[in-house]
Image 1 (tube, rainbow, N blue to C red):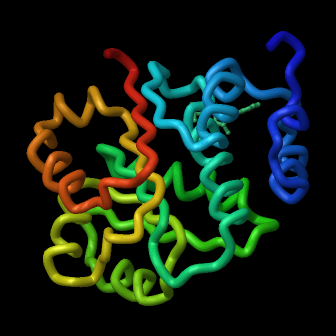
Image 2 (image 1 turned 135 degrees about the vertical axis):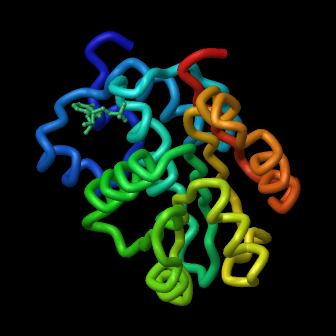
Length: 189
Ligand code: AMP
């Protein structure tokens, strides 16, 4: 898709406006490839390094699809990522791209008190960004329900394996509905 613009990607005007405000002119190759597939409900497996625009490659279609499906009181998109820094960066991006939409997000990550995270979960976010350990802790304590997840992103899957999160990821996947869309991103395969 040479010369592809964000306006060619079937994204809502409010998302396009946020992208224009950020000064994004055209989608990166991973965004051009991934966004149309995700918007048709397909699962994807993508090789993408940090810095290639992969966060928007999954965040933009998630925002679009949740907006199209209307309001709900459940977490419908779950993004699991290996580090606190990545989790915070993803939430920041989602807040930016979704600033003209009425969707909400929350982040749960380890190493800090869970008090404010639990408070944010009580507000029924549409999107949850999480590191694996804290996600399972809060799930085990009954603060998180995963039975309405429609879209699941596994970000930096190779780092997840390197950091010893395999069993946690298996457990998380086993709690998700069988009927869901899975977006798998890894720097290496
Ligand atoms: P990521 O690979 O998701 O970590 O993104 C790397 C950086 O590129 C981030 O700072 C994004 O804000 C920025 N970015 C993502 N997509 C685009 C785009 N289409 N045009 C310009 N910058 C972008």
